[in-house]
Length: 335
Image (cartoon, one colour):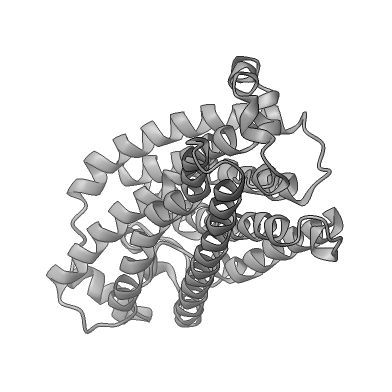
């Protein structure tokens, strides 16, 4: 699950020589932007970690949130390697480490986070549709099993991308694809398509879940308090997760298909290949900003989270009426 691949064997090396990558923007602009995201991500996710260790894992909702936090923390810790590598401030050996390990882990945890957001949507969907019925999927055991399965799936998908590589040399690390064996290139293509399937499946399901949830909330407020403006704010909260999910991840997945194709064949024009590279890097940065968005989602939508933060307790207590209209509106807390 490296950043991309381009060709096989000596053909990949020759292509690297014929079509040198334009790294002016990625060397100057993106390291600065990633540094800002890294600092913000460390601060926000450290606070979130401090809060979540004080919240017991007694619900599926909290378990999914904690797994999302772990994925975000690991993604954040991989950023310094990318920053140093892209800015050319580190020796070429670090670039080899980025290609064979840190970027693989980065992508692995990004898709764990994507699937966790989908599970959070599913969890809230169940609590709106069948709030009082006891089912296995609402038990913490189910959440733990699913979470372990997702981590295991992404680990086994990613592991070959760490193994199926040639020995790094100064010329070969200019493009991560030049490090991959022919089998590694084929595996990367399979993983890339699998990740596309994961994202779009999760996105479509989340869209369906949130449409149903929003409809339920709207009907509930229409019946009980049609003139109350609070339901409008609650409807906005319903779509916060969907909006963040789409804005952060959708552009990257639109670009990744043609970009991966350009890297796995010799048929792409050199200029177009560089344009796709810049587009991929820009949308990947947008996807990375999700590590800063998730802690804000915890604050806005998770009551237990804000109750553990001293400076946030007054916000909840100042607006108690938002939580007692009905069981359905109480269950709408999302993350």
